Image (tube, rainbow over all chains, first blue to last red):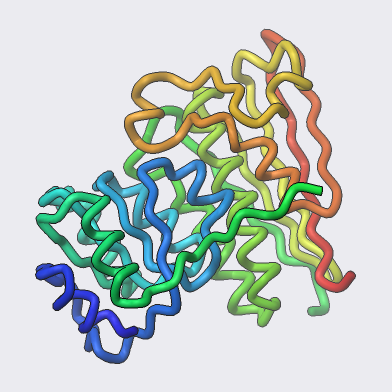
Length: 120
Length: 142
């Protein structure tokens, strides 16, 4: 799935200089806890979150995440958008809740980025 | 790489707007040196978690990276309050982070365990009232 399709599914507004159709998204990870994103989110995953501070973009940058979706109609700080732009990380904003955002993308076949490890 | 590359940054305490910039510089340097992406990513997670620890807990400190032919060594040194019980601090879920840090999405008690998980060699020394020194080594080829 590419980011343009995702933007359409989520009726999301995009803030990006990039051509969304060229950004390929293999899977997604939804979380408001950056500590857990840093521990569990695989490279290449689309990050879905309701937090909008600059550290979200920093986290995406550190983990090579291709894009970020801000949910619940949250408006990111100007600094957040500036850092995303500076680093070429496309940002989508949707009015949907985190639950509905996940549900819609999952229903369209977008895979989870994280699989629990099997306990021995 | 003929000579090791040495990077050093002074990290300000409680500055959440700038936090992560040093880690990003280190990551970009690794990428420019052509280091394998999995190693870059592990180093980025280690430096970022360690940098956030300096910002959140230590009132700032020094973040250093020494990149040589076969490994990267990442160190932080601070003069913060220190960690009274390192065993506890290494337990997933244990945290002493401020409400502000938590509002930013940090302070879930995953930081030090996550640094250790991404390191090939992990060392931490801390003296309450004096400060903490952390060293993480990541080997380029295992």
